[in-house]
Length: 259
Image (cartoon, rainbow, N blue to C red; front, top):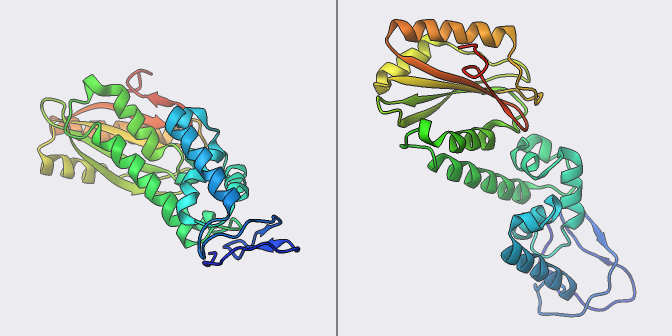
């Protein structure tokens, strides 16, 4: 992390102590002790103004990421780091959802940057979740898909979650049942049904992701869904759907005639 230093004019390149020891070969005007160099302050002000005037759609991913990094690294040019992160993970969403261990492998990423990224990720997931919890799912299907993509599409390992619905198809619980590897997650039908009875749920929606990006179901996916459906049927619980979330699209077992 960079320390609070006063910047003044000097004939040699300015070395800005920072998380990645980036050299900033600029001459900058003197400001107050601990303040940003003027060129950084101007750049950040312009980006913030563009964001407020045009929203995220007006900015490429690396500039949106810069806005997030401003708070973590207050007195350093973060554009090179933003570009490194995008180059490493692919896009803004994948940067936010990248595991902390992988983020820390990127030069310039320290605890403050990881914390800031994870705060933004958590905020996005909580906002998307708030749009579907305690609301009728079938009348807000697109919001449900948006939430599933926000929470799961960019994970690097498989996650299996169950959405529990009451008799009016209102979403009453969203439980993560398990996490696995890049191509497998353990699922226990008995635990799913036990939880459904505990919640007095009448219906379920099963959701899991494919880190490969391709939501095509495997034979194991189909067999596992059949086992859960059989167990649920014995208890009078309906399985509305099983969604597989890919990078940019999802697959519905119901729409594919698999359920």
